[in-house]
Length: 399
Image (cartoon, rainbow, N blue to C red):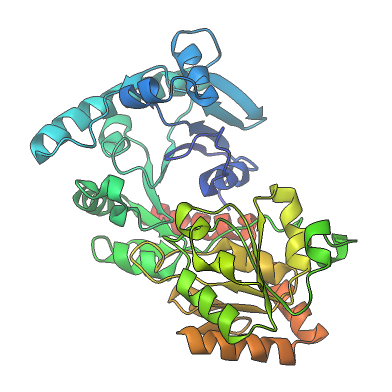
């Protein structure tokens, strides 16, 4: 446990993000025992122009003009801060030295605003926790001089198109100079260890209170009449992360199974042959509070993840959601998924998916359901942050 410290969090997602954020959950947990300043990403010039009608951008512009508060108190120990500055949009600039020069200017603008907020809140000897922001927060260790600089990796972002020009080299250098690196998967921890031995897998936290089978009274109208067995997936249907061909293979090989997909589709899913198959049901996007009721109606839950540079190291939170409801789970085998091997069936190919789904249907039991629920219940934000504290304390004690 770390108590009575000041902690500053920077990162890629704002407090007003609609999709949620690990960093927000971590900030809330930090604030139970410490003072926390959650710094929202600054507005950049190109976004301000292109998304001028976006309510989030309109709000940021009002804050920049002094027409709305820049520091908002969330709870007794937690504040969120909107920097009153605008950064240059430099990602497409190719010469490394020009990009670095302009990025340093951006970091100075950002740091100046954070320093002003620190002074107003009287933060002292603070820990800086950076959630994957290896551009805007690259020079903050030198500019803010924190007691400790923690870099947090939760996705393999450097393989994404946006970061391909400069991301690999920038993240590598940031990992090298950070005091501690914490990640949510062993794959990402191994990657970071190449550049800094103080790199650790601290696992993932989840808020599973709503994912409780006992809270579900009735199945949703659009799933209750679908004939069993129901093989289900709940989440965004993105071809970058999910294997469309695998789903087609399962549906064709087992026409007596009904494949139910709950979530918004990207264009590849919308135009796929899945829509031509009679035993595949697309139920559309649902509100977060509605998702547990759909999972409750699954006989087997699946995560048909496609293996690529983006997915291979990620921690799929939906697995904990499935398990929290006691559901048998069949998922693509990855290094991260190995920690779930006692409670999930891990498939390496299409045929293994068929085999394990059949196995899951045949050998499910109340005892197995309870074991899954218990296991998922250990993946709390409290336990996740406890692991982060453990690494921070160990480093501080060496100073």
